[in-house]
Structure formats: C-alpha cells, structure tokens
Image (cartoon, rainbow, N blue to C red; front, side):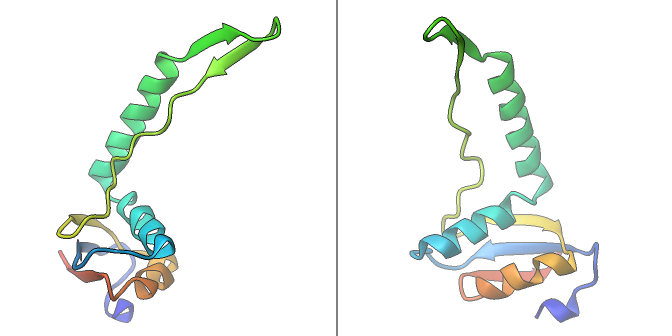
Length: 105
C-alpha cells in the first residue's frame, strides 16, 4: 500500500475501528500528530504552558509546576486527518493498517 505513494504526497487517513491495543493506539496518535492542524494546536498549547508556568519554592530552590500536555490527537473511530507521506513512516502505517484507511488526498 505505501509503495503507491510518493514522498511528499498528501494522504488522508481515517480510523476504521476502535483501537484496543495500546501500542497500536500510540502509533496512530503519533501518526495523527504529523497533521499540520494538529501540530499547530500542540505548538500553541505548548507555548501557552511555557508562558503560564508556575515556579514555586521547594526546599529553598525554584520548582517548576508543570502542566500535562494536551491531548489534541485522539484516536477515535471515524477520525480523519491529512498529512504528507514520507518513506520513514511507511512501517508505522503498515503496522496499523488494520485500523486505518489510507488514501491519496
């Protein structure tokens, strides 16, 4: 399947079913983070966390109270995203091919 796509080509991915295996869910989430709109949301959330970082004193030393990262990419059934295809992500796409449908955009 991934041999039909060229490097830099835009592809559309759709989640076909619920993902129960944790490693497959993490792989799909990692692939979702390659989408430009999701990247933008993650970057804006990261910048906001840095701007609003609270530094407290703990043992007379500065202690940064960090917030958890936001979950912008959620691998749920029916979720669709577009991203560019690169050969180094082909093994990831192949490993979760039973959960996602990949087509040219």
